[in-house]
Length: 310
Image 1 (cartoon, rainbow, N blue to C red):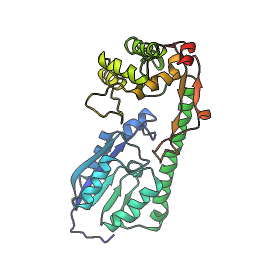
Image 2 (image 1 turned 60 degrees about the vertical axis):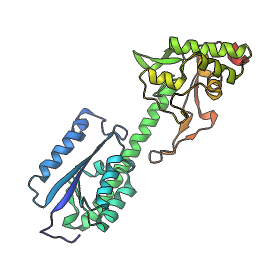
Image 3 (image 1 turned 30 degrees about the vertical axis):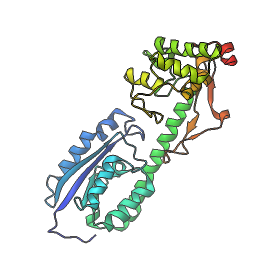
Image 4 (image 1 turned 180 degrees about the vertical axis):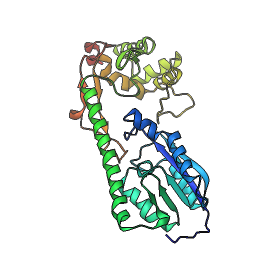
């Protein structure tokens, strides 16, 4: 990059922290990588840099470095495109990103093309100083190491979740309507007295010959909260794409899901969906043979006989 000693660079400080890619694997690392520590280190570094003026601080707290679809990072890119920012300062390359190909794309191609100065303090890298032969090797190599580290953490997390599922531990953030997590052990299920009685009533109505539509209408007439509304009323941050009205009502689909869910006979079925790898977030349904099914894992709400008849 051409060095202009009279130029004042308008800098964006960028900091990132994520549990997902192992940033908090130890208390020492947690303190070192904390948002406040990153800010303090960068500001201390810049305090005697007369050619750099800080115009923004962008924080992605809780976002993985395995991709660049992060709100604060995208906002910083928009500032760069609008000419508000022409310098990016990070603590180190791993805070910028752990994805090898895209990290290289930004550092080696996009930023130079847009005239953006890039500084990674702990890696002793400043694009304004020009790239020497060592940088040509070391910077891509460090990005590759960061990418491999993220992949390794992802594999360990997947393996740990698989072990928990096989032990009959519930690892989903939300549980089936009719159950709740045991307060003393969040990996175990117990019957929710209120929602559980609704589930039992649904099976009774079906055994009496009522259709799913008729059951849904009866529940709505009685003012019984749907699974979605019940989760919200319980203080849950549960979200769904099936809500079409201001208040989600019971539907034949919701009733059928309950009638077909073997969780109500005490079976815990997990691991139905997965993603190809840590870089691809789009999930897909695994073959049923690959699901993890633990029978008689928790107290049932209906008998196996009634479930089979339904």
